[in-house]
Length: 240
Image 1 (cartoon, rainbow, N blue to C red):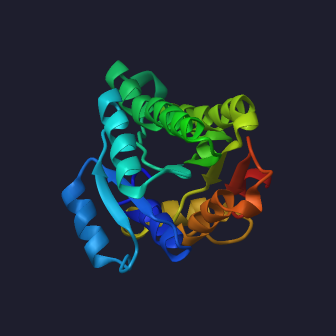
Image 2: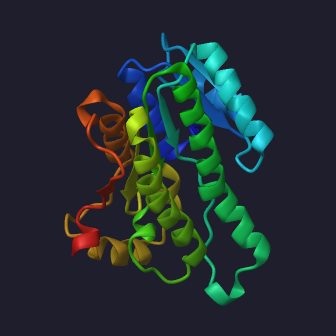
């Protein structure tokens, strides 16, 4: 799993741990990840922190190899790590584009492919779940690159789901609206929060636990016939 040291990623990791999964958790900052594992409720859970730079092919290959050796095999991949960008489209630089798209889409693509190859070589199926966003489904100003990368994840799931269906490798995405992580609660301007909340029919923002529950479902045998789909977790925002 990528991006596991905070927010949504940490909640997903904890949820999967409670469900009995063995975990390979990745981050660019392994010291922080090790601290999180020590501080959180991972007691008794087989867990390994792995350094991963999603813009490096060698780092991706090393992460897959390390996780496989430690855990004995891989069954589920969660692509959660992401880079954000809020900037008018005409002000976006080439470097901005590369930073966001490489982390959010290119890295997730190649990590998914390495994971799928592992499953094929091992002769078993698997599940790939990528955390997309309603920004990949709807139009929002100032978030063109981020939304494009998340929309790419959604289409990637459709394409890979078809290609790997006969290998029993399911590929899906979860698309949240703005999630109220602890950092978001502290940083969001009260007026902006009120405006954003007014667009959500349910009257509340998704919580990290909502996203973690969706991921756990898609990873489980209960979703055995679900592939190429996007599970939208947005309180009705996208259909309002």
